[in-house]
Length: 98
Length: 98
Image 1 (cartoon, chains in turn purple, blue):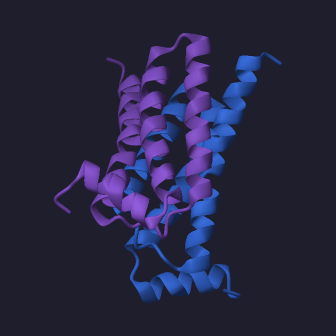
Image 2 (cartoon, rainbow over the protein chains, first blue to last red):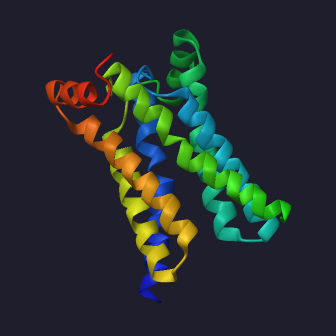
C-alpha cells in the first residue's frame, strides 16, 4: 500500500479514536466543568455535515469515520449540557462501578 | 457553487472553528481539570498526519485547515500538560485581564 494512503488511514484513526478517552473520562469522573459546550456544538455540527457530504459523494470511509465521530461528539456535548444529577444518572448507567 | 461543495466548506469551517471556544475557555478560566490529555495527544497527532497527507497530495485546503487545527489542538494539549503555575503564566501572557 502507498505510504501516503497509510498516513491518511493513521490520521483518520487518530481523529476518530481521540474522542474515546474524553468520553470515558467524563463517564469516570462525571466532570465536564472545563469543557466548552460551544466546541462540542461546532464539532458535532461539523461531523454531521461531513457525514452528509460523504453520503452525497458516496464515499464510505468519510461516512463511517464521521458517523462514529458524530456519535461520540454528540455524547460529550449532551454530557456538558446535562445537569449534574442527569449527568450522574447517565454515567451510572454506563459505568455503575465508578 | 454545488450544494455538496458548500456543505463540505461549512463542515470544514465547523471543525476548524470548534477548537477556538475550548482554547479561549482555558485561557479565561485557567481550568483544564476535566479535559483528557490523551484526547488532545491523539487529535494533535491526527492533524499533523493529515497535514503531511495534504502536503503529499498537494491539497491546499487539507494543508491549511489541518495546520490551523494542529496549532489550536497543540495549544490545548500543552495547557492540559502544564503545571497550574505554568498554565497561569501562559494564560496571563495571552489574556492579562482575566
